[in-house]
Length: 112
Length: 114
Image (cartoon, rainbow over all chains, first blue to last red; front, side):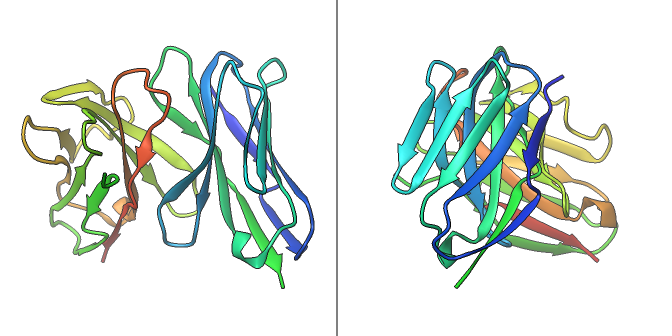
């Protein structure tokens, strides 16, 4: 049974810092992994999608890496800004299924 | 191309009433997934539907909950005789086909049972 864990659960940093958010999963047979952002009381915004054949994806100040063999993904946020404050969710689609298994998220607060 | 549309965005129901949540997938998408996010918890899969078919409802509570995706119109998640524990955010996602590499999520419906 696929389980997804995100560490840390919460993070508070001053503006300008580079950040690393971690996601680990127990079943390495994944189809893809997706990082989302969720603002309080809002929906999900897809940030980056990494397919199983890929090692990383980049979008602006965001970079996500995937290591299937170790069951890990990291989301790197460069030069953090207060507008980055949100909950970041990692979700895994295991091969042969169509369901996303979500982690419980990392609540990020970037202080001005 | 509009994204996944969910309505209402907020819904308040008294205990014992029925809640109907609607989801219109992205244009051209025929696969719909419902997820529930309980307070302080992660999103949990509930049900996967294609047009007129329920493919997997393994995450759906056995009683009071039902889902449909008719040939015409939006997908409906129906909760009968709501209880306080049903208060949550319900998210819908759609994809173009089974195995599509990306599912697109709606903004969610926040159900509050009073």
